[in-house]
Image 1 (cartoon, helix red, strand yellow):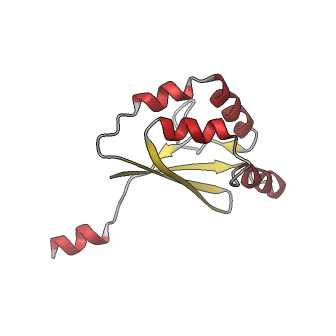
Image 2: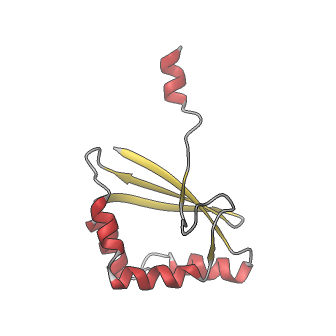
Image 3: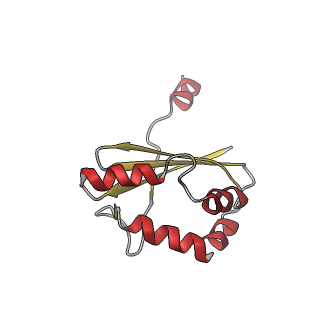
Length: 117
């Protein structure tokens, strides 16, 4: 299993944050978006929030190849969803031009530390 972590900020506005969270509730996320994520090979995706900072955890099989996800992102409905989410999101200051979700780097692993003992 591969697990990747990404960060993104929301606009620092309580009403906008509440609306963003509402869009991500089960049964509110557009069904075709959920289907496209799963069809891309992603097995699980979770988003966590503290303040206006988001962390997304994406889990996929070890043999996952990201190109199907990129193809799914080209879908018109996915683009429409992303445009809707743009209303609430803001790029991290260190993000590259056009980059929304920034990959995070793992700096500690308990398991790796235990194995090193």
